[in-house]
Length: 175
Image 1 (cartoon, rainbow, N blue to C red):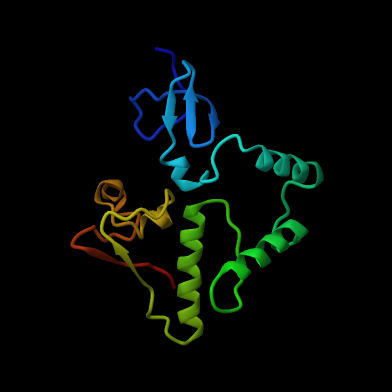
Image 2: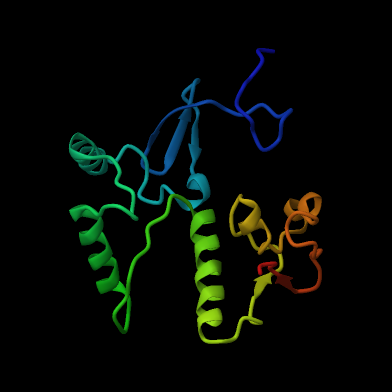
């Protein structure tokens, strides 16, 4: 067996090599189709090989691919934030763009903690999580997870509180 250099979730498992995607299907080297029911943790819900998306990405990449939010903004980011705010029911909303669901989860946790600190209630720092929940791959997101098997080996680094019961309350250490 050829040595692989890419770390996978299960190290001794063989994974199909995807050659391309079309719509909701992924196709491996032999042309076998797989229904993409996971989409990389739901990040490709629009499907694969969508021509309009590829064209929009190419057009934007010709102009600028990325600007860091603490230094710059861009017209596409401003338009998207405005559009998302307009879709949300009820009030005036803001958008905060991140690179992954894990980052979104950790950012939401930080915003909630900061909110209560600024309200003079620094003691409110517990996170309630459903049993068997998944909030992301990073240690911070894992610290909010109620998934026993994913969390078990990282308990000491993820707040020290084991999973149990129908919900999970985690103290999040900060000073």
